[in-house]
Length: 427
Image (cartoon, rainbow, N blue to C red; front, side, top):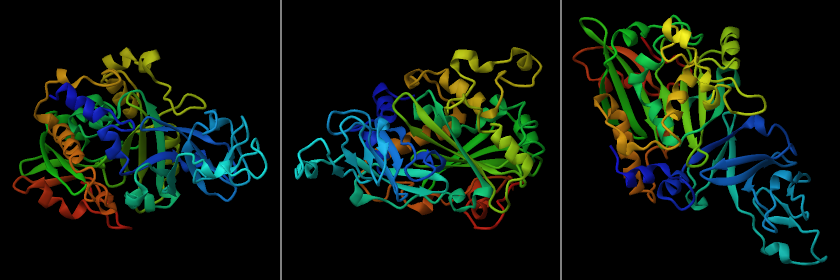
């Protein structure tokens, strides 16, 4: 278990905090590109790492991400007019370009040079893979964008969603690298979920609820192997990639099913954006898959209208169905893989008190991920941070049968890297 000081160090990500400054070294998934669909569209509120910001797309299509509050009298720029290559405050008309320069100050005398002294805080933004990415760190040390496989695929081969989760990022991310919970929380849904039905390996997951874990460091973070018994000669391995600072790739359940992955990005210390994506490297999604994804199946959710908040939430007990639980249609009674996860993670409180934990052997990946994050704080100013190099994120996860005498890192080595245009490997 962690000390209270270590727990605070890991979970606090606002400006000036050690973990917050570390996270600002990385590019951050900030928005779906569809949230800023065209030039001069409505600005959008964004909160990242405890900072309230406004995103907009100017008349030339350039993206801006500014401090939400005008430098003049601190009115919110959310109410501003997005026009003529700038965002104009609705209070007194001060106008800012995407770089935070004050380009017009109509409330001041003609010829005044006062506006030249004004600089609204602005962050770098880039559009890639259907997302808008923000870089909130030192511009002189800006890294390249990550190179997650789905970012280079055509839109027909990927599906991306986000939802607001009412917990600190860390307990959400820890759920993503906890492979043992799949045998329980999702036990009765692997066969009927539209994106996982009929997949190889489900029988091993349900039959062996005591996986043995082996965890190794990778260039980007951790390689997490969950070993289950398969037959006399082989083990069934589900190998998860965790990449700094907040990414996971979910091992595929079969060769015909899409890959999946997540990022858990702090909004503030008590909420996070849970990004989810499915993708297939060699084929477009079929109509059945598109319908399932749009319906919020699998790792995605159904939203409350006009929000990115799930319909199932704490106020309605996540729509728990005790009858389904008793009939073994759902292990917890909560419908949907995503809701099964966040209902339990949110039940731990906004920030889990890790001083009360009692971790076992199945928690090896969680323990080592915490250690890797804490160790990165000691090198937060370095240029070799795990996950900073785009090559660190150009990897895959896998589920695979391996002979019992073959180490998983060795046996799966060739299928854990990305080969563009080739099908991922799975049993």
